[in-house]
Length: 287
Length: 122
Image (cartoon, rainbow over all chains, first blue to last red; front, side, top):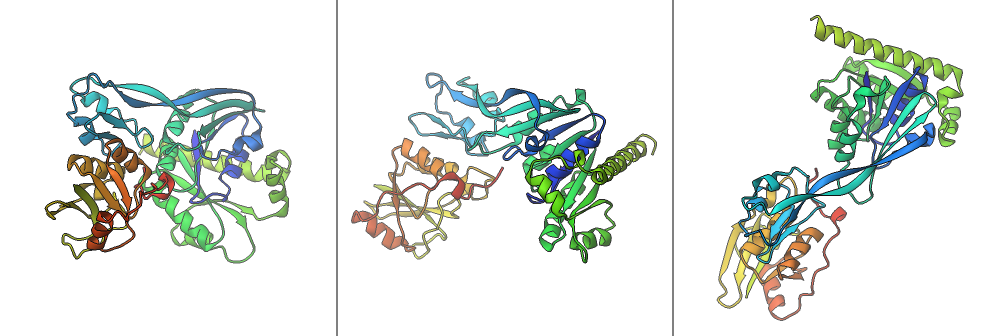
């Protein structure tokens, strides 16, 4: 079972929800797909960490073979190749590594080299397998690192908690692609509602089963809750805004390992999501 | 000498466009004959790489110099590799920009960093 945790903006509580859900399971896997700023490891503090690098293919031109036909230049929709009359220029920071230019070159003047764009750190924290993606600073897209992170997740302990990047762009789409369920984390403000609406639209587009966790709940009106009720969106859990939780977060403490009532809340949330996934599975298997 | 200017219309009374890669049209101007031709910028609607694609167009028209208010770093890399001179014009008037260039008053341009330039998205 793969559960993706999303929100339209940073600081809503994706890592809080994902790490604590991973921590209440008997065994689990936590995957940090927020590759530009991975922070789940600050809470889980994995040990025996192994590092693997992530590479993407980038075209290399053999000047002796290139006859300047420009088929590759005309083909590349991202403008990553240009021909100057003196030779071909490869702009590797806008190349999307599709490999089309290499396939297309009639002179076989293009080959590929590997360019390192990031790393994957794999370690263990208690009974949690902890996998973190790290994008190197200056790289344009985290998608190759996320794609590599999510490969081979079929052999890891479940549930798998996928901590998504904020927003609803390509990196989030890549992160939820194989998810069985999406948890949308929302803040109790109008800004929070706007961000919730973005990811809500995305999970519907991807036809994923989903539910909302209302985080930082205060007494009084909760615009995010109103948004959910008006649209009959499932609310999976409500987590109170509390000084104690804020303190634990600032100290890098996994809350459910310290607080019994939160442990009960998160165990209930995990159980609820597991039931939802089971129901979805049965609906597909026995329609 | 052949110069190019990103413009918003297809006549000499139009304005110099604020960006290079996302300009609607390019003016190609022959300083010797004062011949002016306008071309639609095919890269305008490109999902990404509009700057480098427009740079390729400059190469294909064999222009000697580009007069523009701003130019992205990657487009500049392509243009400079081809030996095209890049000059900064702050005037929105096409005629004024050309006149200032011919008088040698337009300074070389400092390319805009990738993160500040409006480069499509993924």
